[in-house]
Length: 351
Image 1 (cartoon, rainbow, N blue to C red):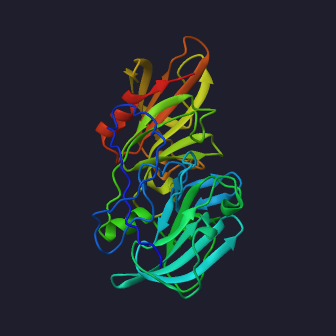
Image 2 (image 1 turned 180 degrees about the vertical axis):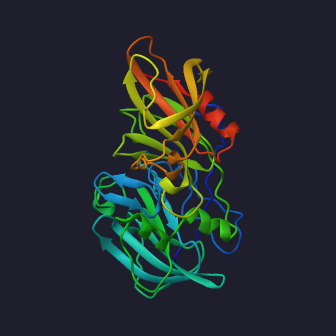
Image 3 (image 1 turned 90 degrees about the vertical axis):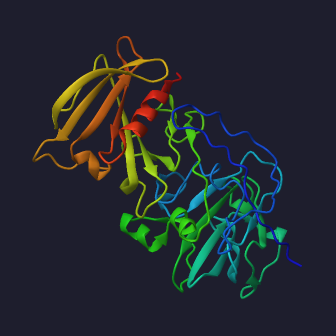
């Protein structure tokens, strides 16, 4: 008989105005969850372990394109990690697929809608499912595959969880065009619409393990409900909201770049409406705040969020006493000043 699991992770909430410690590795001990009956989360620790690739991020590593799922990371956990069905449904596929290793696709009926869920990087030997088999909400599907094994197709130990509507069987984890992201469902929005809470978890950007860390030798608080995308074309960091449609760039709230110089600099492509010298970060780094606006007739800035072409606030800071690295922290005009200031005051240069 298939096992029934209802899971909830023990999530630590950390304020956005301080630097939280890294989440320690630990045992995986599923327990009954008090969930809204329409659906459950597919794995324990969904919020606290969603730290590497989220819905809508543009990725350029082994794969290239917009990630159309959430990845839930378990690479440091040696114990078995169970994955469960988010709702009742019908198995459409349970087998090996290149890029995933083991994968299950299940058509779920939730309320008055039908959605398909992709559960990727599974150990297919931990259970046996046939196409057309029925599953119940919270029912065990399989364990995660081990890191760098055939079960994960050589990938990390993590769950790739994607959602879409429609009758076709989709197996891709990325889309090459931004507009194609719209045919997928953002898991954060989906769970919220069905009364399933994903904790508003916040963490710190850590250059030792996060993408872009070789360039950005800084730690800073990532506000709850947001994550960081590494923009390869510009070597930039994009802090974006986990909620919302479209790509991570379209949900951008803070955009971070850098330059190397002996003093504060500004680009000739922008109009500076005002300038203010300030201090930011835990160690009171010298900084300069600008109210800027792209000049008329200048082409839109490539690979950047659209709000960067409008009037907005930018804060440049450095810990260098001479020639050195300057970091540029730009704020979406719609983001609250309190959140922006909290991120700025959490900054810590670590090199």
